[in-house]
Image (cartoon, rainbow, N blue to C red; front, side, top):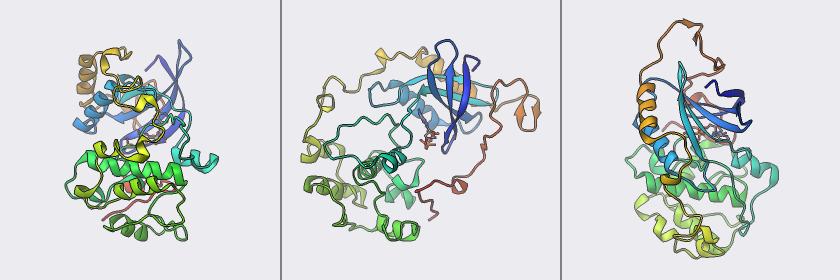
Length: 291
Ligand SMILES: Nc1ncnc2c1ncn2[C@@H]1O[C@H](COP(=O)(O)OP(=O)(O)OP(=O)(O)O)[C@@H](O)[C@H]1O
């Protein structure tokens, strides 16, 4: 971690904090996600890292490397300076349906921000991650086009109970005041279907008229910008190296502690509340629920 200078906090998620850093020799800015060593480094974390490493696309945050600190596993990645999608929209207005803006923002997964979570995940049923992700992508699309979260009553946006009822209602329909094209409305209504079995699938989306309209070449199957595999990945680390670092991070940090901080650690992580519970985290505009 000595190769990087920590500049400031940029956010926190379910697993830890993200910080903005500068690589000392190149002056390049990166984002680093710090996850506490020990049991938090489970197979999901490993899978997220390995999947991230294998993705190379102009619209996906690029993975750089993983490092170990005395207390944390540090995941170094490209820094997305654009900020949060919702804030970008609040500040700069919603996207036009034909606007081909590239968002340098990490696509949201179903883990993390409650406003994006599919009903079957909220109700803690067994669920298929891919189908639940279709819902989350639908929320992202809606937020981009409408500039508000779906399911919120605009008159009563903080009424989480009402919002939840709308998410869980089998026959949710997009209100008339939402101004999107007919095709888009149709696509969204096929996404926001509470029962996962009836929800539109990715192959169906790829054939949907709204998706196909003005589709940039790089999004066509096999197009130039299509996802490339890890072979060309410019990560300095091999799969084996990454796996061995992750393995080492599974052993909880040891050593002389002073007020929760490890002596000799070069980082300032004292503002990290690694035990913060998701329910304690205030996320503006998002709802947190316990069903
Ligand atoms: N590469 C990045 N560039 C800029 N900001 C980032 C980057 N990665 C994370 N962030 C910021 O840090 C926050 C926390 O990121 P993190 O990935 O830990 O959590 P999350 O994506 O919100 O959810 P989860 O914990 O489920 O992964 C993000 O919401 C974002 O604000």
